[in-house]
Image 1 (cartoon, one colour):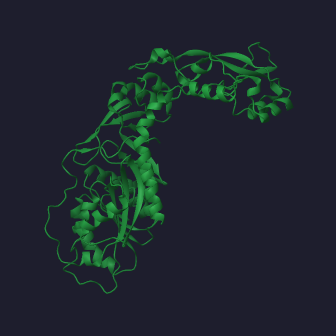
Image 2: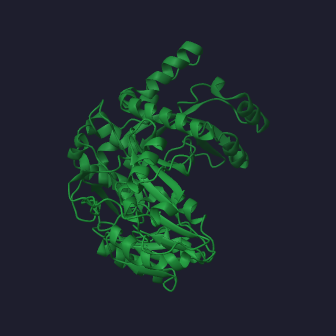
Image 3: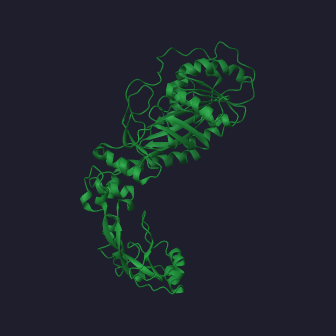
Length: 483
């Protein structure tokens, strides 16, 4: 029943994802205008002054279509309401008016009284919330009365600059109206990486500069191309702004990793999944990580006291895997290999497995290459067919990842895994939903005990092996997601 419920939820997410693009077009509507229409209909006596609200969060219209960032062009002066507050109760009033006071990046909520009185200060208010003394909530009005502060509104000329705007506000002002605007990116150390769409490419350098300006610690912004055409599936990247330093340092679940982001695969959205699987590993267990990358499964499992055999075909991933093992002081627990996944299964894994199966500690096989991993399961067919099965088999647990575009992704990945193994896994496995990669694409993990009949059966029929990676050009596996 629970799996059925999860499947229904995922289908709903797919449906919402499909209508998301349509919903995005609504962003061109002026939210201030919508707000005013709603308010005037419900409370006609509380009209907002039209001179203030349209400008407060809207940069000047002259910046529309800008491709080279001119920060000065965003400067404007607006009028905002304010309360004149005695210094003696200033802190208490500011605390009481948290919801009504102005909140903009770099804009103070308290300024000098325009009459230059040293005994008073002006508390700036948000004109979207406060247009008249009656706009204050009952709680706020009571607080003002208790502090003997007059509810009479004063008006203050406030200078807003580029620094006072949020990244999405700048980009919405610059890019053509009616087109999708994104300020979403994934952060890897000092690097922000984006997946810009075609209509945004004309503004790519401006977008990169805005993202870097508005996110402290980001010193490099890159855009991933839409095609994976390198041998090891690392995306080609274009630097949009900042330094061309691709060596990132990140911390995930208490573990530090360093790597060249332009030459290896790293996905910051998989930290929860890494932790979920690693928590299944106990001290003394053995983990075979077939597509290890720079070590997000292998290294934390080694820190828990497991023995690790970690493999990756990419020489750069292999090099950084070794580096990260030393960085986290687990090099004695991890044996690293630079092999094709199939060669790793039929080589080091095959050699170690018989002795491990006679032991009592658990054996895990992690196969996190969702584009191809399910096809690699056939490497286990007849892997130990020349050997005598031990009396008490300690069969390995496999965690195999796959993408699915099917309306029933759970059934889809189980059927594909079964075909590759040559053994029915229905009712003999569990399926975990990892994440929605795109509106019509899910990442799943199928977990099962490797069947004895598969390991010790006769050789599988010869079939063309799936090379790692596929040589054909593949589309980017992800679309842009907000962080």
